Length: 364
Image (cartoon, rainbow, N blue to C red; front, side, top):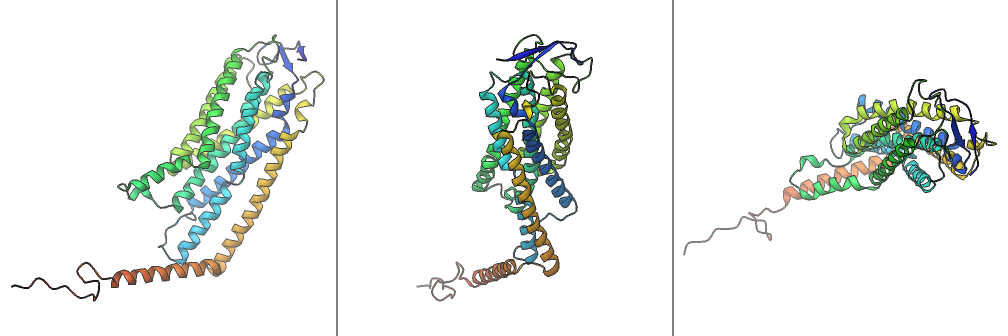
């Protein structure tokens, strides 16, 4: 394995450090950073938009069943729920595949690239955290409330099974792999050795203070931010929609930290590879795919955003679209018919044939 020893002191640790030029360097290229960070920013922005709508009372279902106003409210909630998950499912899959790839190449992946992989894949968690909590808010409004029927076992089971649907299962798989990544990275940091090949350290002058102790400072950062993210994702799944303010705030706070650490660490170590000064920026299949998926998500957002805008514009002008209006009127008519049938249906006190009261037994 080709590597070179750079007899240069770390500004953060006062040590010499060996860095390795590896094929796995493309795991942390510009394309991966743009794709993951861009999707996280997109999810955070959409979640902030939904939070803004809810605080102003524009995201609720409060009109009676069968009314045109209720159809409008449900349609609006369905639009927003669909917009929230734009690209999130794809990025979850991409993040899981990214970590599996890193684990498969763990023997040749040096400490620097493993640390960057940790920061990069954390963007996927931020995207999931913000999107899931707002999506769950929308689904809670659209689906029947089972809390009002505590005695009905079928509804309690249905509510419990919801935690194992596709999106939640993807979040669980991501969390398990992310926890493994944290453990593996901390073990690798314990092997911090500037004079040992291959790549048992990295330059830290832009990410830690000059007096920081390595690898202690690095392990503290990984443990604290990793636990912070895991708790946030679990809260977005199990914490309930009433915790969405706290969840959105903490995911928003994490984003600039992750972005700075990713960029600063790359800048601090850029050009430290023998004959590989631009190796991290080579565009391969993975980097191209990440950026392409981000472009698809943006295009989908524009399309669905235009549909939502047209819907709101039509509602403001005409009240509701023709198809939804016809469906609402039909629902009302069916409800009225059912009420009439129930009102005229013979009760247990009437004979099924004539609907007349039954006579009691005559005395003999």
